[in-house]
Image (spheres, rainbow, N blue to C red):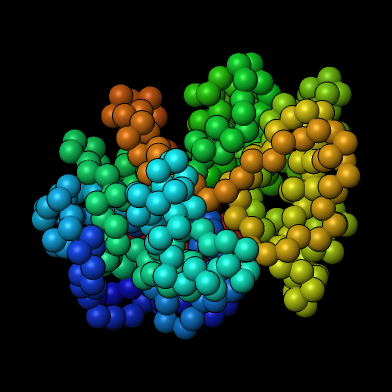
Length: 390
């Protein structure tokens, strides 16, 4: 089969690799009909994520048709159409039983490697480093799915792929980000980053009762999408100082809830701290660029909540923890517990409450994936979300 493979910084290649096979009784193999490039895949493309190995198959937003199941999988059969969550979860450990699927204690075969870096191991993830399991990813023609009796959700309607594909990651991620923001009816929610996760956070904030949503970015196409599709007020941080503008918009109090939908590669912009982060990461004196986190702490109202769906890799530098403590801020974060959200969010799609395909700007073949990584990373050609068709 053909698959997208990682070979180092800015080096993705589409190559022939062996087809996956059933390895464990709870496995399934699916033929992928649609998959996507995620913003967190760019951390691989830019070589921020450690423990990647040359030739690793990437991608964690797939869906397709079941081709084969192991003898332990009773809920799926050949021919079923499924969406596959990016988190691999056993369904029966301490964490899975509590709905904390991204913290599964069982699914990462390289848990010891993760413990040395994090203290404990989260769940295994598709196509996202050997520290997180070394699993082949979903930017390919076929995919082996471990714990297939827990992960994939069957799509039994005739909804097109593009309306359900993002149940694999970015729709649940945006929704959990809005949940983590602890939105109360009428709250003002500020969202940093208007990429795909930011767009779904904006939509989800309204679903959870926000009274006002403010979107912050510098890319015109993203801001216009947030304004048109998400009904958000917008701030271009290259044209206005975010803190000053937010204080003006909120009568000096600040937003009730702030969401970091950017993660470890915050744009340097014109700020000194972000430029310093960029220089430090370039010479390996830091691992993450955290301008957005600093700015959210500064801007959030006293007693407010910071929600962090953006992916961070390692250690952060010069985090203003004193202001966070003295303002009484709450931090909520984590990889998405996708399995918890699959059924309720699928119902929202089926009921017409949301059409997740609004975020797609580019539809290309698998062979075009390497060039689309660059286009997506560099925000060229109005690129916001790329769907690949194997």
